[in-house]
Length: 423
Image (tube, rainbow, N blue to C red; front, top):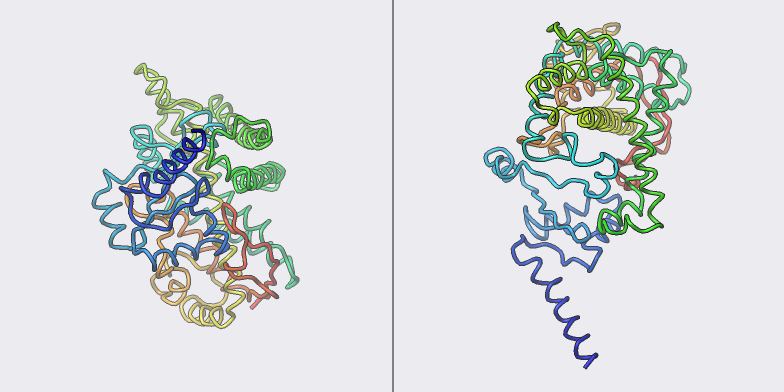
């Protein structure tokens, strides 16, 4: 009797795993119990090539199981436009971080990890404020050009020796995003503050990319077990640091803010003015301090890490392709001259440089209503930072990796040092 019950239970479970839970989803590889299709990523490390293999086998729409969570993958540009642009009302929601997100954020907060009215209100507000602050326009360009000059001076100080560009590059990018969020850049007297932020973000990426984090993402119930307490403690510690940093900025602004003035210096100031306006209308929830902390975290982390990683890989690929650098410098010499800084005004006159930067087959900023908030700023940073580095220096290195050689984490970041030789 017991054996019959066990066999029946196993049969029911197999029917559910192999058919019932997949019946209304697009085709895809058969998921393993508990693990789903995650072993495929291990087979094609660091993981991105797996989706190209699956696209060829199952077509432009297929289901990939992240543990017990099905994800429908769309791998065709026209289909993406149909779903995320033309039918955006039905396809603007997104899966959130679940237990990990709740632990870090204290609930459903921010822009990246929210849906519905909260997401719509705060995305619209952020777009409006960032545009008013000059993101993507002349004001942002002047800030980025200033950071570029500081970066080039730091590179020049290496005198052609092998150097770790990360320290100087992250200061330039972090200063740019921090200026728009909190109203100041990381000058020399703010170096310790920047280093603490960078260290905390590194800890967060490691915690979210580790094996335990992967297990918790698949099985949220594991978070209640004592073996996983260290993970939750790390997540809380890293987010608490950024939360306290942001709350310190809020307190400082509250001491100085002029609520009657229309002038706005930063996102935090604009938010606090909107918060005061809504509180006068008896709305104490939609623009809370916790939401401000989480939005600042989203904008800071997303605005920094993606640009930082992209520029590092671009430098690696440029070093691996010196002939491309030479063609870029030839075009720059013709259009700009040797001693001038490259600005946005010359962008349309530099088709080859633009071709190097602009991918033909990727959509890095997404499409539709979830399109990246900071696309204009990110594109401007990539253009001004990278083109000016190539304009002034020959970039080289030894035994440099390709993307395929990297290790799968939240983002794949190269660690190699480079040589910058004055041209």
